[in-house]
Length: 515
Ligand code: XMP
Image 1: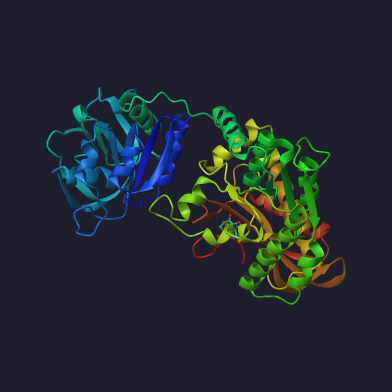
Image 2: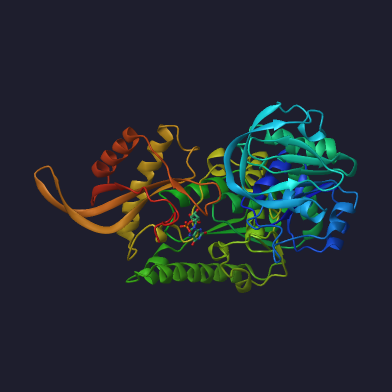
């Protein structure tokens, strides 16, 4: 399946994962590695092509990320994007300088070499996404200029004989109107890829590989009902059937009816054979959370209690050979194993689960996939769409959407309000257009009037954000009519709520969740 691979060398740019996704969208398998990766390792992978990403540095400064010139002499096609393009020129003897003005945003690019392999099918004038201070003032020997803009003499250059291509703009972002065509041209016309990386072949291949690895071993999976763990569990069950046991811990901090919905699909009456065990641990969690108001403490308690509950269940099952984890490719890159712009969210999903279970090996069948690819695999496996397209839900659940102490009563309030909000968002046809949306329970009580009565009740906060990577986010501009409808339904239908607020804070300075 992975006989052909294109490597993305990460120089710290913000779009590096997007580059890999675009290549995979061309049915070519692609992995991201840090620019610090040894050249011998790269050679050993025998890549069909290499793409150098953008990055925040200036390539002519002494301690900026760089790569040895040998990279360009291996006979493997290289495409440099933005910083990658500048670095290619710099390393091979061209010149890069600081421009007077930053070229930023949608820019018209004029293609000077229409018959360039990389610009086949691209219009002579095309809109591209630019973001740079430095510019290539002189191409390296052997290169010719293939595109320019009003402000930028070298928007693209190439040394076709050596299969080296430099593009100053970002073909990987959607603002570049024909960027997909350019990357497609690179992997097919320049690298000569066959394009045999497909989801059905991924599913088939993974099932074969898992069977081989697991043999007659026992497998344990912590199922949360989220997309990643659901797809991992179903994949495992297709591969090893009865040898798999899935444990689903209901911590009482799930969305309304979610525990039952997960059980309906994955439990004994559902379509899969998962040896599904549901642990109803609501009371335990509420007990531990009683009186706790500090956000980090609450998170820790929920995380630790989750491990204890899982551990107890695992003990009942006894030693297993394999523990399944729903790790996906962004987790691998974000935790610094792959790329360079390694960040941040590691605290979110590392729960210490492995150490509490008696197992020999971890299985991570989705380790190579991006989120949208996991979804495709889920559909391929026949998992219902409403589960496959579920929005992200934090591990500590409603615990981080209830400010202050968590109680059963508050959980019910936020569950009911959130259910109404989700229903109305779906009715308005917006459910697949918003990155993440939910109701949270502020700890604020205020005076209101209902009928002729004075009330003193809670305020619900509604949140809806658009985001690409969940690191930054903008508040979504929901239609007023939808907000009004949700507000009036929540006030009418959910007891103890007399006010609804809409949070328009972006991230930063806010976070997506409330705690
Ligand atoms: P924040 O609130 O950090 O959220 O802006 C970014 C994304 O991460 C999710 N999130 C979590 N996920 N455990 C998780 O598994 C957590 O503790 C956690 N906190 C936030 C959040 O839902 C959003 O998608």
